[in-house]
Length: 410
Image 1 (tube, helix red, strand yellow):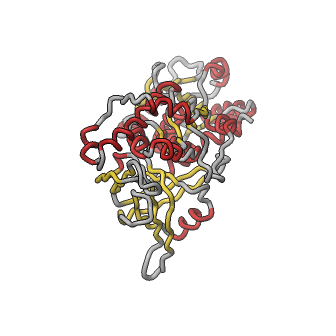
Image 2: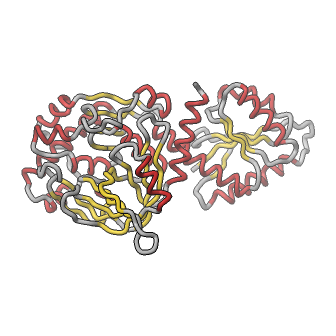
Image 3: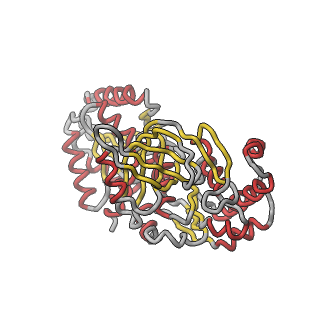
């Protein structure tokens, strides 16, 4: 991945050594970036973003002439030679006085390279999130009394467009009975207990696909229980399939869960599991661990090592997805309804369960004391979003970027 470097200097000496020093500095940075598949290049307008390498003092006026045309945030790099750092500090102060965001990188080449990689990840996430159309199909389910989101606040902080789409419009598409091309249909037919039920589930999937295309949605959340009453079928399989296709898809009209899943996808490119914390068992430090049972009737199909199609738990109708997840470390995340706070903790999948009286996909997760209490006290609703691995730093970086930008431009 290429990053464009713009070199600024102001030297009266045509034979100045700073140019060779600058070349060596960039070469060393590229040596550090090579294994991470990044490269600093000059004059590449197609690069992911720009960095401004201030090579000497006196570069401030050169910067001022181009400043208005530079994309934000502005990233300055100093090699701490030839009065580079004082010039960077002057430029940074100028930008701060004008309420412009500026990132200054200096120090060892390895540290600067690591910072460039982190900034790159944020830039990729920003491009994924900013301007995204996200559908709210039907209003949030009646029981989500702590999960309503201010659309204007979501626009201000994350620059997303929340679009209300009526359940009636979706039902009109489902009622057409037109099935889209279904990837892996033969596999689903083998898993399904009833082909008529599967056809109904795929009609819901196809109706959602047409809604996605009509509104150019990057994701949506669905008031799914209304479909059970209307069609005696569920959207569980449709959501599982669409998440695997790269469309953010959450159920019950839960907007904070949709935005949480969007952030995870943006900064890790991973699919994630919307789940209920369904049972909490406190452990004895000497003999047992704290354990939380997370469960739901849908999950991205690619997260599972083994799949089973059952009925939906609450209704006994349609298709509920039971997936067996890999054991190991997970990240548990959820934005609050005001989008200013969040739950972000880690856990470890110990076991997949098949208990009665719970939704179909069930994972038993070990959570340490210091992580368990935030889950209880800062749950921010009845759902959390679970992803494989430790994604905490990536999620934190993206949240901080968007919230700082929103605060900067108040």
